[in-house]
Length: 284
Length: 276
Image (cartoon, rainbow over all chains, first blue to last red; front, side):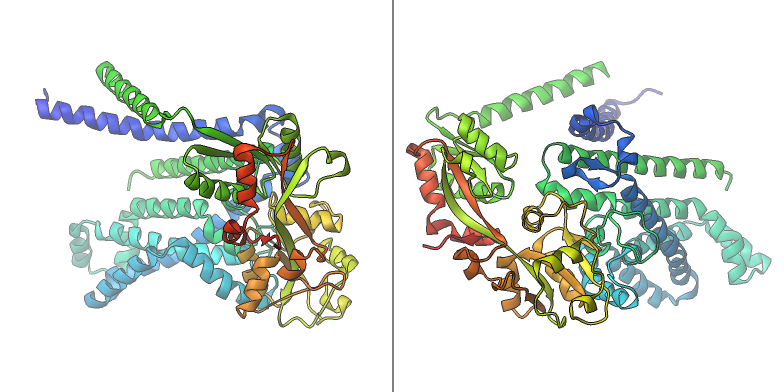
């Protein structure tokens, strides 16, 4: 099939755009490598794991506590937000009267639009003192997880909602013909049918949770340590960059770009895992 | 595909040339003023530089960081027109000229609900190194202390550690904060917290009714006034350093930076203007 002139022009344009988008990711990676090169040159990569602590001014560069803080907080938030988000989507799709469902959806959309600083500020001034009563200092992994949950919940809820909406109406009619209960319909038909959409939404939410900076900077306490309980103060990789970049020079600055690289690879790992999972279950 | 590559390359090339053309200074008489040194002074110097540029259209002010020691050595070697040092000049640096443009002081703060009225130097050291972990050991309530420390690289941290003779690896914090406002919010939200912030910010906050109190040090109240008259111990001068008696735009800049015209910039960075 030969393309018309307009089609060919469009194809060239689209190829250019795609090339640009792909090049951007590579450029960012290159930029991170270039900026972290000064420190990578004279510090063995293993020292980012084996050093005693993160005190870059004194030449100590241990990154792993921050890596695990990022993983724990993301995992916690995803574990909390996924059931809540799916439940919220099921409610608005199958249980709420249509008027209420419409209002409810607008409300969730509004929640999605709340800027992260606002969430962080609320966490710092309201949630942290509350948790501080339970166990000082209040700013902790738990506070971080709760604020993150609040922020990614709408993402999960809205994507799950649209995934459920995309289930073919024929399936629903078939279920009705079989005399399935509403619960039976949800468990047996719509959730499995919408699974890939819901998984994509959860992955999107996890990506947002990993990248969240301002809110975590305000509510997680920022002490670089391996957390032993939910009430321990932690620092995520993103918070580390935001906290120290403004005043960092020389090797310290380069070490912060190494944390950026670590973050990038974590996201890469996440996307890769998601791809593997969705590939295994493509039969749905 | 090949054609596309050529087109893209051409566009990039044209853009680069055009951008270069545009930024190329067309006035050859532009004078450049280079400042290097302390990262504490650099943000202030950059602000002063911007205002200075708006008054002198033929001057470009270039501010680079690298620490007070670099500021001193660059000024001495003539690599920079002006060095920046966030400390007093040492005895072996008396060959240089120092001009104090502002003062920097920090105050230890507690929540207003905390009954502790003062702490001595050793008590603060013990709290920050984790030897004292409960307020009752220093005459307060029976409550665990929440130690609030600053992030690495901040000048406040550097001054605090220097004054108390600590290394950051010795400090056992429960919360690490970035800027002064976050420190105040953290102490306000936690009645058992101890932190430290710029005197200017703390005094302003306390004056606005924020629930913090400023602890005196060595019997001297933490206030902007006591930083200004240099009696408050936890403070330091912010100096501009030159090798020779300044002339030309260097002289103009230092006079401008020492004038009352930039007091608002100094206060915006939570420093204290020099008395005059």
